Length: 457
Image (tube, helix red, strand yellow):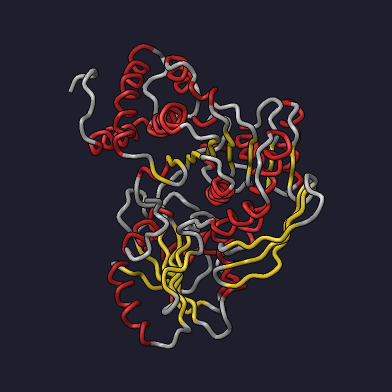
């Protein structure tokens, strides 16, 4: 296969892309900047909303996309990871990038990747860098949306998405994740995320801890950017919640009156994510003449779905999926279940996670639910970094769970099949929550093919 020859098949293009994973994660923007320079800086022609943060990025991007679409804007969305289809990462008005467009863009970018490797001292761009470049080319030349909701991959400062000058920067929150790349302390991680704050570009954040806000404030001072943070410039409070919906009240310094909204997503963290998205919309309306009517905003929030986040797959027997894949995610799941679980319900968890996550700490986070949990089933799944069931058991014991609570499941598919069969006839007071790695949740979701209406096509 010569460099000049393009791929003919979409699958070949995808294999080549995934093959770039061997270049690993290499922080730094020089490869991105070199390629963008060669292709004439298409990223300068697109208005971006740049979203970073440890948790809640995906939901915040989903809220923003849906509100803008309701108001008649064409919206590009770039997110990661994907749940079922690689093309979920690059969407236009909710629809995935067509295979033929992706194939064509891979063929074009492949030439620059090879030249970057041969002609510069920077080496080959990584998989994520190449996907980011493809998204920029797709949005600037093919789809041409009015605005792009642009999610960082990892961190911020050196993340390959950080080559854009956005209208607004958003930092949802800071938590301990990817410490090997971003730093060991929350302040270090905050500093990396603050790297998306650009000269004169307003910043919206859902972070509340003073020592982390101080990091953002310092950076905003240097860049002369206005920082809006929850609790100070905008507020949201959850009014009521039941499974499948919640109501919140929102007010901001950009609005005369407070407003009430309904979300179909559960969890107090979604109240915060929705508020961050609302404040971002307020900034767009106030400073960039975006036109969104109150009812469009309201409809957008209410119609936002985010697969794999407290997602009810079956009401009887109750089966819920949740991608709680780090300690903060676990804590959010625990606080939601604590409020939503009816009295007398028996809670079962089926958990699988990646070996490089703080598994014992995650197990510890489940402690508040101890009185409600009947069994913790741990399992492994087909993925290179997945932890084995027996090492998960050890992590849970290290996290304070007694052996009699634990059950190692050799085959999660067989377990779920027998659970559904057995419990269909039983009284509906058993809840099964499948949680852990998003890669695991993705496999479980495809195992339940009946619920694909939100897959985007």
